[in-house]
Structure formats: structure tokens, C-alpha cells
Image (cartoon, rainbow, N blue to C red):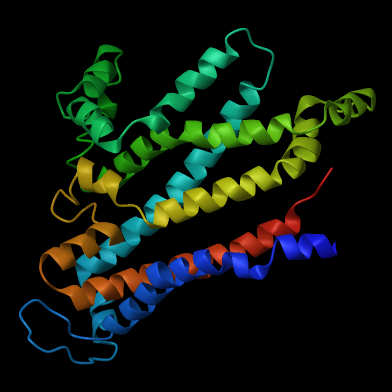
Length: 290
């Protein structure tokens, strides 16, 4: 033990710690300060303005809509990616001849650039696109929609594309979790007369909690920080119907309203931290080991 302490002294983490403080902690503290100022392109001096930027965030209709859309995107994608990911993982963990091929097919969208996905999906989702024509060809013309131009459904269309892209990635993590569960548990459950559903609820789910924990954190943080999907698919439109916090931050900085943009960024940081840390602590307490 003494040798191990000498080999791995705490001083060895100092370079990494210094880099982390310089490039993450220090900018975060400076950003926190600027979120309480009137920092703008058209001002020569920067003055402290208290909670003005945050009051603007919670009174401006567009900013409130962006907050609402961010929450909708996070909730829908967390549920969609994890439910579909678990279903795919359980199905492709069975002894199928084509399971390796199917795993590759379902995983492949996650390695595509969102820009490429946008180029492919935008024409398909037009009113006269392939998806609406497909509905009409099978007698389901009533389901045809203006997927990217109807303000009522545009954020859900972006959610669906994000789920399609990332569910395979979540599937891969769940597959790793499933393959770490000993088959002896299932054999014992079969001897005791347990069916597939009982085995899934009482064996698979409890032992899969570490993978569920990882996937929940990844999808939740990714959902709250959403930017690229909305930016390339709709640009926040039509109008401001699909604006999210990420696109509002970029627009604020582009307009030279840096104080407001920094306040939005600080708010996002606080929300992500306030949700992620208690959730991580709660999920870790629920984990069981074999």
C-alpha cells in the first residue's frame, strides 16, 4: 500500500487540475459575473445591472418559449431514446442470425453528422415530401403534416429526428450492460417458473441500472443543451416556434447582447447542475451489484 501511495501521489493530478481550473472553472466564474452586467456591443463601459438580464429571460415571450421548448425536447428525447434503446438492446441480445448486422444498422445513424441528417430529412419532411406521399399511398393521408413548418409540431419533429439518430447509441450501452449479467440468474428464474416478463422486471432491470443511469445522464444533459439539431433543421423557426436556449444564446451573442447571452448560459448551467447531481446521486443509490 505504501508503494502504491508513492507511485500515485496526488501531485500527479496537478497539471490536469490546473488545466481544468484555467479552461473551465475560471471562465465559468467570469461568465457568472458578466451575466449580471449590461455587457453589449454598443456600450463602451460595462456596468453591473443586478437581476435585469434574468428578469428579461422570464418576461420575454420568445425566451420563455425557448425555455419551454428546451424542456419539451429534453423530456421527449430522454424517454424516446432510452425506451427504444432498451427495446432494441433486449431484442438484439437474443440469438438471432442477423443480430450483428441489425446492431450495425441501428447504431449507424449515431455516427452521422447532424448536418448530413438535415440534408437528408429536410426534403423528406416537406409537405410534398416522401413521408407525406407514403402516408397518402397507404390511405393515411390524414396523417400528412407540414412537419418542419407547422409551429404546433415542429419541436416534436426535431425530437423524433434526434431520437432516430441517437437511440442506437443508447442501445449499444444497454447491450454492454445486458451482456455483463450472468446467465445463471435467468436459469435459476426459469427453474422457479418465472416467465420472460418477470425475469426482465426482477433480474434484468435491477442489474441494468448502471447502464440506465449512464444513459439517463447522457440524454438528459444532451437534451437540455440541445442546439445543433434545431439550428440545422429549422434555425429556430418557423418564426420562433422551435427556438431553444442554445439557439437563443447564439442569437444574443450574434446581436451583440453579450450580457443577456451569458445570463442564459449561466441559467442553463445552473439548471443542468441542479437536475443532474441529485438524479445521479439518487440513481447511484438504487444500483445493485451481482
